[in-house]
Image (cartoon, rainbow, N blue to C red; front, side, top):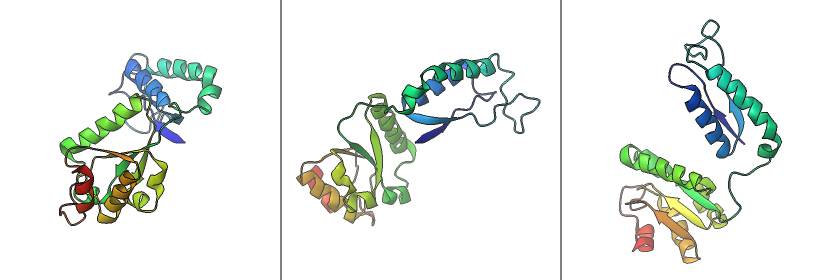
Length: 190
């Protein structure tokens, strides 16, 4: 289960922004809410407190009471309709080459948020998952890293030949672990 920090700290949050984050996290499947330090300015061990912002303490109290009314429904819920299994690749090779810094990283995060808001359940898979056969459980793979190692790329190419669908960002999978042209994925993308 997912645990999410939903910190009501001031300064930085307002009662409205906290409530929006709280319910947004619940909509994304969070099962445990962690308020971190939920204390007044006189007793907070850190510089974070909730009593000087005009209502966050009251908002947290109200929202947790509301949650109690339908917690038994949420506890067993799934944040999406059952359907096609979708994976998003976390490429360790891409991480070495800093593929997700800057614009590419923002694009990957935006893709994740867009899919989640579209009620698409996403599992994050690694290159090892692609090689060991875990990819067979999925119908769609999103690939946002420029670098993917040769073994994982070959597994993706074979999976596509067997009917899998790979969706790639610009230059996704075009380089291998040696920063050379990725032969296996080059044939997949043409």
